[in-house]
Image 1 (cartoon, helix red, strand yellow):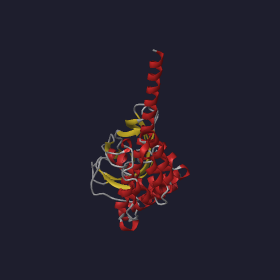
Image 2 (cartoon, rainbow, N blue to C red):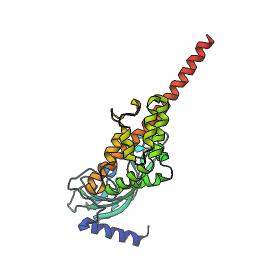
Image 3 (tube, rainbow, N blue to C red):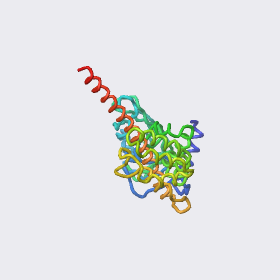
Image 4 (cartoon, helix red, strand yellow):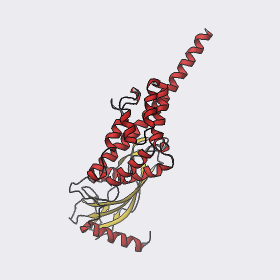
Length: 308
């Protein structure tokens, strides 16, 4: 990024820090820690941070500030870790020159376990101008890898070429754009009704063949919501989510119209659609894996019995 570009961007953010009413920027009067901000706040957000800066002094006792570098607890996607790990500060220009109270910069954190996974944040930090204070406002432009939990590949495979559309919904959800997230998720789920039913039927043939006919009849319904209504009770026990039919849960989330909901309500519904759909796909995968393991065990026992 050129120096001129940096100056323009900082100037733009200064406007945001003052009175920008852009819909993408949400403020909170509640102070949070810098670690909490980096870990849990989506991009395009300005937040008050209680420990954003470390107070430093020169040998002549002049005060200068440095953007803090807390330890973060993030999901590491490396083959070595694949779980929650501690990420530590690895690099970035975090020092504010003497007399400066704001800075745009990049901060890089690295997994302390595998030392391979990196997390990079693009930030704007502004000190609250109170001497010796560690507080300030921080704006998150973006982060790499992107904010939010990763969507499992088996969920994306279900939607084929529309996986990109589903990920657009995920991006909207990450940015708290409820109407957009709901619209994308609803479009993809309803467009792939047959694929969802095919996966359920595939599992049902193995673990509950007596209800396959009901599922196949429901699949022939043109509308996704009507198809779900036909199979409220026709679902294998192994696919239930906390005792609930996942298709009924999806029906509940999808049945409300966009025009009757606030953006916050749409965001909540979009989140529920994604979580329930992911849980359903995971249960389908587990059911097939358990069935394969059971068949392998039966086959081994049968061979052992015949050889004895």
